[in-house]
Image (tube, helix red, strand yellow):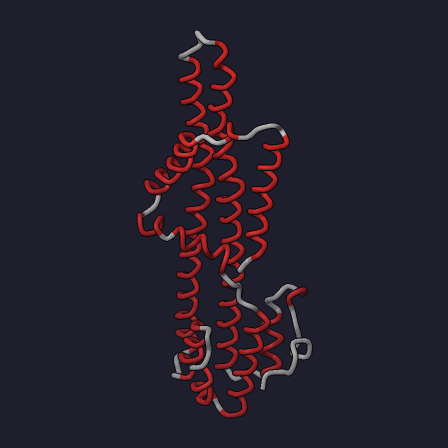
Length: 260
């Protein structure tokens, strides 16, 4: 579970509610018709803009911002080095049994392709195509959340315009203008909150998750290619570490016993 997402949302909600209560507000900020036009309008526009299956998957996509565990690049490197050592010591065919125990289906597939004697260029192409499709699926989720982030404030403004029209149509009672104006602006408030506290940050978090996952896939692809070409395990480790920023790099000594 990604605790930062939960803490961020909880903190944002707390700050908004606290500022409302500190300013003496309360029930005036709760308006069901305004909420319906903001949320419902944003969802309706999204349904128009994207295929229905992608829209229905948005709930699963959003769950990734809370529960998806990013791959540990150092763990991937350790596994690749372990397989490189085994392949160098016993031959690449010896990897088949060990690969079957992997939880990482992408690495398992790459090792199996190498064991099966797949040509290096074909192996790399297969893995890169699969990685590209993963990126495409993630990008679709980011696009939906980004679109919701644009649509929510827009429908909030539409709700405000509706409220203003209704308010101006009853100017014969000046005492109602202040309250009417306040209610009219609530939809803009809802749209801004939904966009800036939920949809846009979640789209950004998904983008980060995509980068993390694609980095893991790149490490696997390059690692499998190195194993297939018979590179020295230490060289494989150093080559893969070059893909990591300095603060993420961990030597086998720092991570415990080197893979056997």
